[in-house]
Image 1 (cartoon, rainbow, N blue to C red):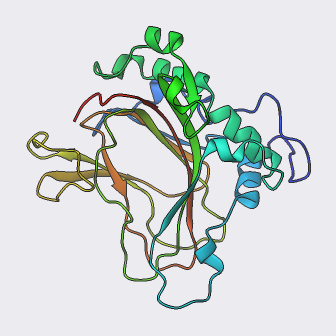
Image 2 (cartoon, rainbow, N blue to C red):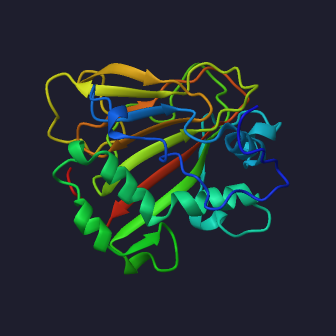
Image 3 (cartoon, helix red, strand yellow):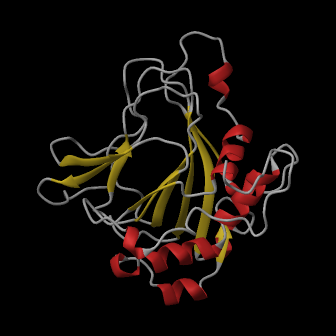
Length: 265
């Protein structure tokens, strides 16, 4: 197998590569909104290690009946950067993907499609950054995160933990890096991409947008080592594809940056 030759006992490479290193503006797709889907976004051996050594949703191993389906839990970058119980590759991944350079990299890649309402690259280069949830939370203009998100077992009929929506108006970009286990045979769980049927409604700050307002254009499959990233805008409608019955959790890293004020909504 090609790759770095890393295993769970060897130290991760320094500097740690990011899932954005292999992207270019040529990768941008415009329909239904500017976004990039990149398969094999990270060295496959490093990705395998992240999958093998990641935290598992507690419900996956629970035996109790009447559990709630598709419960989401998150482990933020600031909490994964130092604890001894966290694998070194995960620490390095969290540090690299919550660094200010990631936000600048995304803004540079999408420069030709960076929405006017978002801060420009010049502003971002001068901005003060801090980790989401960190001690200096109120002392910065941009908060970054690279959090492991786990969606618990799907115990009923196919269902989405969050269907079509637009992200919060203070978010600059969203990126999901999928960490599907190799033996996970569950159907669904990808990312659905939508567009408005007749333009944005008056209120888009809702948990889910109704089917009467939007139409699905594409689905990014839930498969390991796949990245999907897009600048945030009122037109960046997306949602979790319904997932079939499964005792497995759904795992991905959510990488983002936020500012203090609402930029649209």
